[in-house]
Every structure is written in structure tokens, then in C-alpha cells.
Length: 302
Image (cartoon, rainbow, N blue to C red; front, top):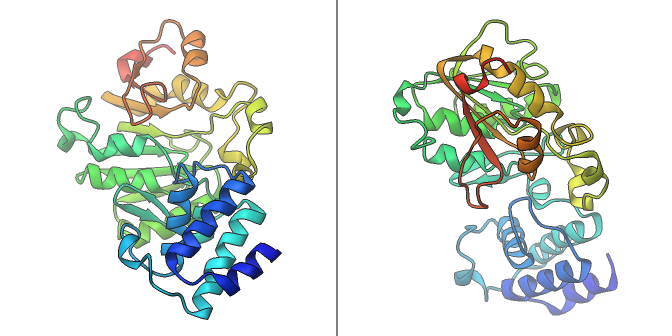
């Protein structure tokens, strides 16, 4: 480690000391956040509390506690790896949190951060008036399986098909599904979008597909380059996967079925490409630019 870290090991003692040190190093290094935290303080607090096996929502009671020598070494190691290798915090801890849900993650899957999770926490109300009628759900591009798992909880009467083209991602999803005891309700399917779904039909299709355009992929901060490229980029304009979903979703939806898709910062491009499609843009914590909804009838003939 650099001199900064060797000096820290000799002179820092408490959780508060290491929190301050981490924030300083994160800011100095110009780290990029967006994989669970939005700023240096929150990410530093998360990494330190996780490393010390402390409650993630209770920093203050432990702030002035002194660390043992081995604890200091572990905390400095994770701070060093975050700064020097620009590894997202979720990959360092092997944990991603969405609301009250926690998932295992590693470099085989994109770090879960979909706005669709927020909508599922509310059972997609008011857009789905009777959640008990959602009996079949499809999660396209499932990655870690996070949205499939949250959907299974949101719609307890449903069977969920979780689809991904990556066998490695499906292995991570399988682990998370087992952790939640949902093997009997979530089916994993290796498929390029709808390609291997046959004649199955669903009351709800959700998808957080790749949506980063080629130019933006080239400009991504180092943190994002640890994620599978397959899960980020989607052609020149970022809409390749979304075009396929819009073109094919109708045949996989039940008569009253609903499609919900996250598309990043592509709202303007999408509306320009489909001027006749009546997209409903759903409000999430970041605004109404990121997730659209369409009913099956809206997709007919696309």
C-alpha cells in the first residue's frame, strides 16, 4: 500500500477516524459512485460497517470504538482496493441492496440498481389494480435475479421466468433464488430475450436490458468497466435490445398483459423512434424519464 495507508495504520484508531480517512481518499481519487451509494461518505460508511460486521444503518453508536490491529488491516485493505483498483463497492463486499432485499453479486453480473425495483415494492400500483391477478411474470435480462425475486414477493401468487443470455449470470441468479427459497416459483431460462420461450405468455413482463449507447460505453468511468460489457451496451444508440422487446412482447403477453422496461437516458431517442407508440412513463425516485409501461394493445402490430 502507499504511504498514506501505512501512515493511517499507525495513527488512526476509531471507526470515525477510518471513515474520515476513507472519505478523504475517495474524494482525492475522484471515484465514481452509482453502484449503491451516491457519495463518498455513504460509500465509506457502508464499506467500513460491512467489513466490521456492524449494522449498516447504525454508524453513530460505534463511531468512537477503537479497532483491533486485524480490523484496521481489513478496513484499510478494502479502502485501498476501492481507491487503487476502482472496484465497485458491491463487488468488494459481494452484496447489493435494493430496499429491504440483499443479493449476492460478483463480476459475472451487473450491480443491481434498477428503478423497476421501486415500482415492484408498490406492486406497480396504480397501474396494476389487482396484484393478485398477476399469475405469470417474465423478467428479461435477469442478471443476478434481483427483479425476479422482488417480483415473486410483490406478486405472491405468481410463477416467474427469469431469462438471461449469460450462463454465468444465471449461476449467480440461481444462488440468490436459493437464498430466498424461491426455487419452486422462479424458473431460470438461458435465452437471448424471447428466443427460447416458445408459446409462453405472461401477465407481466419486466426488463432492465442493456441500454448504454456505444459512445457512452467508451466514456464510462473505470468502476463500470468491471461489469460485464454484455449487460451494458446495446448497439450504436443503446436501443437494440429495447427494439427487440417492443417488436416481440405482444406475442408473449396475455390479453391484459403489461410490459415495463427501463431504458436509462434514452427517452427522447425512444419516442423519436416510435412516434406512434403511447408510452406511459412511470415516476421513480429519479423522475419520469427512465421506465416506460405499455399494455399489450399498445404493442399490437409493432
